[in-house]
Image 1: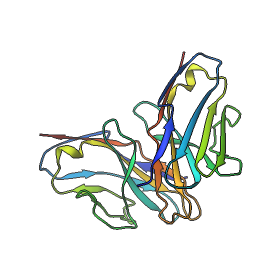
Image 2: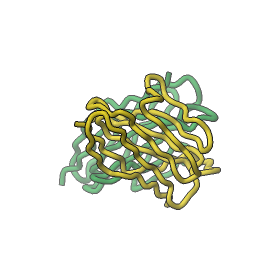
Image 3: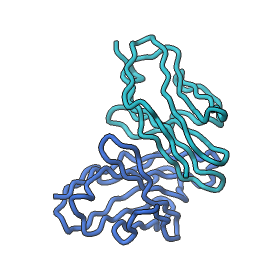
Length: 117
Length: 110
């Protein structure tokens, strides 16, 4: 089956630093990747949709200058949390949709736990 | 705007008992509904989609447009079914974004 690798699985950083999270589709090409944020005991909230070679589409209320998304290739998308603050601490999850996949199935990464001190 | 509601945060059933995880949605168009499952310490994965009309691991879900529901059912719960279950809706034609419910934690008691 399709595998999505997300790295790192956990990161602890100081307030004010930037953190980059990678999302890779290992055995398929992903034209579209999605970035979610999940607060404790709450649902996944879509942050942005990333299409290879074009600018990401952000959901309402998500700061695009805060959460930089780059989808440089068909197998890699990155989310950079810039100047992280404690309120950015959360669980970030990526997913990928296969190229030409008519089934509209998203394959999920294992998530990244970000803790900002 | 679309919305997915899972009214139960936690559902506990005994092994062998029937299971029904509720999901209701609000959407003005023709929806595509999914159930995703997350087992302990594992990533989110697709369980089933309403379009395929299949049974996966004994689970079924029927889209009821009149009641705007997509409840997940299994006649006999197994311990390995214990997990977090999320109902999700795809936002219409040409869109691949999913809107998720808050999830229901199913606990199957031995």
